[in-house]
Length: 316
Length: 160
Image 1 (cartoon, helix red, strand yellow):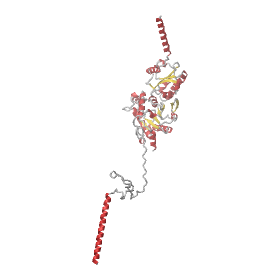
Image 2 (cartoon, each protein chain N blue to C red):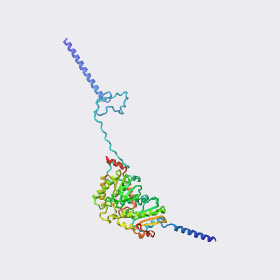
Image 3 (cartoon, chains in turn blue, green):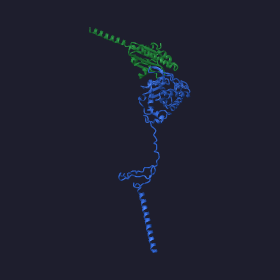
Image 4 (cartoon, one colour):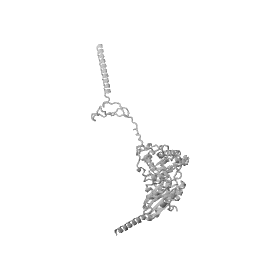
């Protein structure tokens, strides 16, 4: 009896071991199957936080129909983090020549570009001395307003009178009669004997005053044009192109400080030695009529358009 | 007889031509007047024509209703030298046109005083020619008035 009982127990143990072995083998097969079919929608797969739980269709596995595809249930919920705030792209203001006004460096002269037409100067005023008078007379540009007189300088611009529409009127009062989009300033040659710091401060004050009168206008500071080599000799040591370059450097600095466009009209007329060619002037300072046309051509090829965008850019 | 008639007719035709030509004013050919003046050596620099008449009307304070035609030759900045030809639309406008020309001299003088004193004598001796027959006013600011053509040289001073 004891013997038969012992045999029965032994048989039961063997059966149990066989069953456990079979279960282990089945588990191994299931594990291998799962490994080989990771995209099987019926098999939930852990999804990293933040990633999509939906299977992505690929060219190898054509997207199954809605009936065939049960809705996948992600086993891991995405963490409830705040949705990322999209970083706004800074507004880009491109001028008529593809230049980004936002990036405009006021500490550099306006670069050369495809020339604009006369219509660029609609709503434009020119302020300056006798060279601006000459520009108004002989550049051939029409439909613009000129506020110019021979003796105008940063010292007297607040009190000087100009002829405007047939009336002799204070320059700044005349300028206040209308709002302009663009104002070109040409001053500095009558100031040549002033100290550099005085020129800087007085010219800066003129810009401030003009900007106060014309808040929406873009201001263009034109560099003092060169003089001829002969004029530099005749008119004394202070009246030469080195001195003019020195003042022009201040005008460039002011352009940067006051966010004005600096037009390098010195470069426009200087020969390879940095002088105004003798043929371009009767007295060594003022231009002959044809060269005012050259001046206009230079302004046209160094125009910066849509300056209102530039102002918006400044506000950012 | 026929010959005599022919001669009389020819003489009459010549007389008519001469009469008509004598009616033409001394100032009816503006470009000739200007060219003669510019070639006379009276100006120290080459004056250039200003094509922007609208601007010049504005600068001079001229009303286009009183001027039939105008030609402006100006300095491009080096001096105050000028020659301007203005033809009035009507005889009644002559006085106003001449006044505008004289006022221009005053404006230039104010502008130059304290700035380029060497220009003041030129302005003090500026000429304004008024020819009512041809309704022409000519303003001249020159460097050497003695070199001007006679018809301009003896004209009255603008600031008299």
